Amino acid sequence: MKQSELSKWLKTVIVFLVIIACTTVFYIGPTIIGWRASLHPEWKFLSILGFGTSIIAIFPIMVAFGFSWVICDEIKKDNSFSMKNSRLLKYIANCLILDSVIFFMSLLMLFFFKYFDFTMIMINVILFFSFMFIAIIMAVLSHLTEKAAIIKSENELTI
Image (cartoon, rainbow, N blue to C red; front, side, top):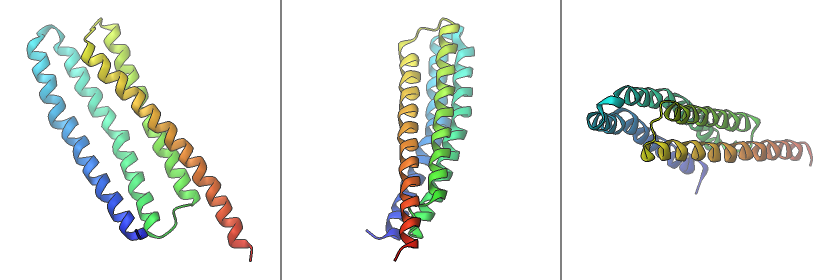
């Protein structure tokens, strides 16, 4: 697969993921939150907090998708191993860590308000660990990309 084709496919995946994320946060999430609030009117304020958490959490994700888009542009230019990509991968890792913190705080809010709903707790725990795990992978990829960029620049200086 050529670099331009790979870049195009990766951008298609990014667009698909953005659509899924926006659909989840702005349609599916509010629908489920509204349904749960109708079942338990006494916890309606937590439903509003849950929707607020989703809205706040979508911003770092969208920023990370934006950084991924720029990396795809670099791949298209056949500049995969660059310091720029290394920095962008670090920024993506930081965005994902921020999302992990948001969902951990959401988990703490559930415990603080003594809302021991298994589903909500598990959603927050799964999101927390998923974002942390992917952040670690992005940090490792950033380090490897940086090392590869250094080797690439050294090889360009030799005959």
